[in-house]
Length: 141
Picture 1 (cartoon, rainbow, N blue to C red):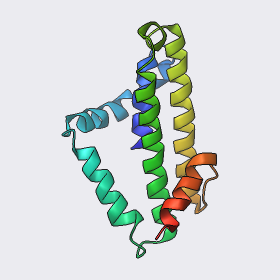
Picture 2 (tube, rainbow, N blue to C red):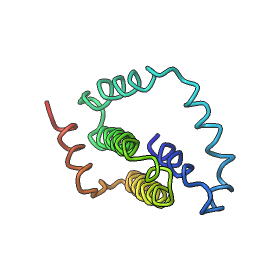
Picture 3 (cartoon, rainbow, N blue to C red):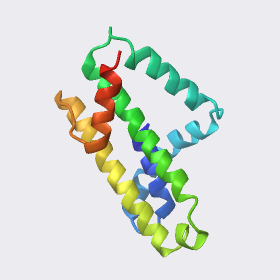
Picture 4 (spheres, helix red, strand yellow):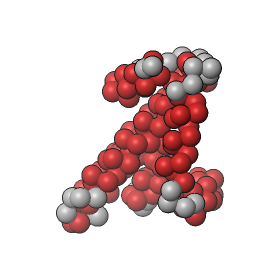
């Protein structure tokens, strides 16, 4: 989910990279389907994933760690998006805003791809603040 949300923020600064246009057919239907869901669906899915997967010791630690890491990545992206919406409109939608959203989208896309690479390789990623928080959530009793 975090990759698709980062791609959504990258579409705010759509014009600089025609590279994104070639992947629009892959991402746009998913983003439309997520946009049609009720507003409470994301809270329910986060709660079910947190209580049903992260807090249950029956699941392997590796799986629980990567689930909470994805959730923390998505929440941090939402916090950045909400906090950035509080800036003046000439900065948020201006030339600086376009470069800002490209940088934010690039960082989160690279973070998401690094997490996927580590999960497929059977390793734990080393992302400074998110991994410590994920360890705390998966090891807390």
